[in-house]
Length: 430
Image (cartoon, rainbow, N blue to C red; front, side):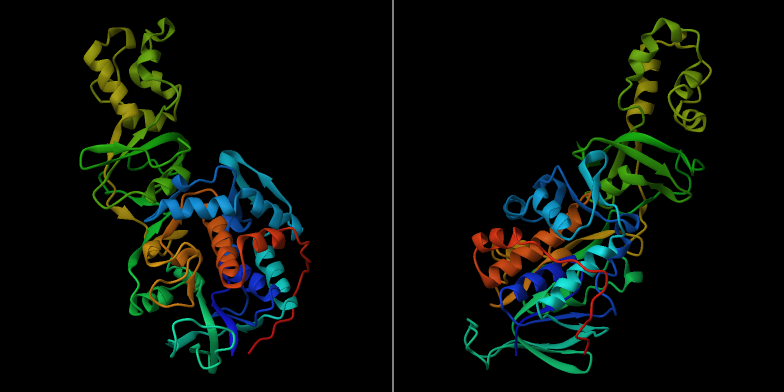
């Protein structure tokens, strides 16, 4: 009989298990992989984008922004930076407030796993969790209630625990072994679950779209989304790079837009977000230039050819009337396209959807099943590009551990403890 069983050894599950074990709870940590943090090791190009200086609820897609805001206030960017420092993991700040590790992201999982082992966590690695049963008896499960517990099989071994934490993530990146099994379990137990959908994923464009054939070109753009006649910007950061691919568009601008895009929405692309075309046309030195040549001064020539209306391409700027100038400006600043879809969950870095926060308490405990908690990507919180998802995983995992073991004041005290580090770890593998 464990006090806590955690399903999923990603960043959320690892920090939840570590913190709970450090507070004298017996903890079982189960993962289908032979090593913790397999999906984490692929994040940020292998380096890990762990957090961001500009954390706020507007950087997340969720059904309860106020709960996300409360979690971020309790666990701000500096909390994650303190964690990295204590684990002796060097980091650097890059554009848009992104915090990247200077060592492989797998080091974070390895060092948290070392500390889990030091705290007495039992690892069930290479084991698929299955055949779950709810506790019987009273709705409140105290440490003295030996008869009340969640039961399941970790591989061939039966495990029982008074509290259960589902931290198994989403179905994004199935090549890493990801699945929606735990979300389906939550739905079977009466929780409202939003089906997972791909986010942080490239767009696929129709084969005949006007900018086909530009693969390899990368430019800075500002993206907007038009839905049912209303236009909004999906990215608080504003301008990011867009990469043309053989199937559509990718790059940071597209990945962020995919978080808020829905099938049927139009993308509105501004290819010169800091250089108004009308102002460029008014400059005397540009009067003798052809419209196409003017654009090619500020963007790749192939893109300029594709954007410039055919009847204006060989007109001199000084010869263009007001209507022609407005048409050229619209072609550059308000280029409209409708993606046929995205590359899907197979190529998505994350997934929107999961257990709705409205099904959970403010400390991420189930309102349907007492003693059941959720953290990480399995809940309906999807971060934009820039370290927001790993930060949420760590923060929500720490919050759940705090909810099971003490008060927020206890958590703040625990943050200040100096954490040990190591390069390898012995595991209590079952």
